Amino acid sequence: MTVRVPTYSAEQVRAAERPLLDAGEPLMQRAAGALADVVRGELGGVPATPITSSIVLEPLLQDAPDRRRPRVLVLAGSGDNGGDALYAAAAVGGLADVDLLLVGSRFHERAFAAATASGARRVELPELRDARYALVLDGILGIGAARDSALHGIAREAVLSLRSLVHTRRGMPRVIAVDLPSGLHPDSGAADDAVLAASLTVTFGAVKAGLAAGRGPELAGELVLVDIGLSAGLDAVAPAGEVEVARVIDARD
Image (cartoon, rainbow, N blue to C red; front, side, top):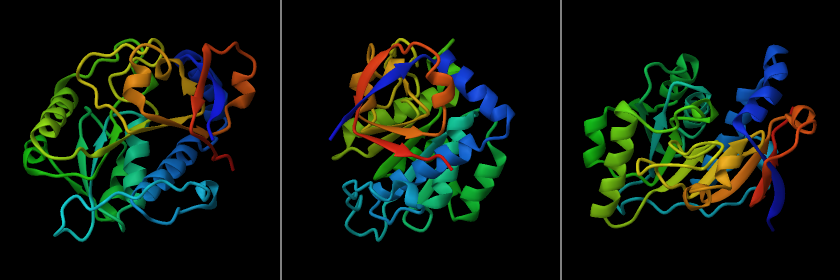
């Protein structure tokens, strides 16, 4: 059963986050924990924490009959979305072979260390040409890209490379977008061709307006909203609109 929820602009979400971050609230840990449970559900595993124990998503098939475990690619950018994706990678290391492609000028070092400690391995862009993935976790860009949402550099090359490989092979990997599909404008929903269309978007705190506008509905797939505790700030502002989500996950402490 779907749930209808309000949508908000990137600035409204940032303003709601600010006092909580200043107070030391663990917003990334809440987001990453819920994301990890969704990924584990996609891979057929048992959720790691009780906050998403009600999620039952269809498990993925093996990406090749001779592989004992599915293979997952994590695209990690410089911001919080990249950190969320890397922490999720750390949580699913026992269920899948995980590859990490760092596409930003920097990365979340603690999250990367946790991912590699769990068995994930760093890969470079040329290695994608010979790889087959069951699941891609898109953590390149988030609401910080409101001024320029288009992908550039290695991030753009990676997305275009993955898109081209999809057209030359049978089957398409499931794509989970972290907060929103990278390259989609968080407010307007505008996007060029360098965007991975998501099967599922796990969005944190509030549904961003761009997920329901422009190309958002085309690129976001199924929407799952993770409540990380922003209601006090968001209740005081007028939403941009409304949208239906498949599920709301309560990740508050």
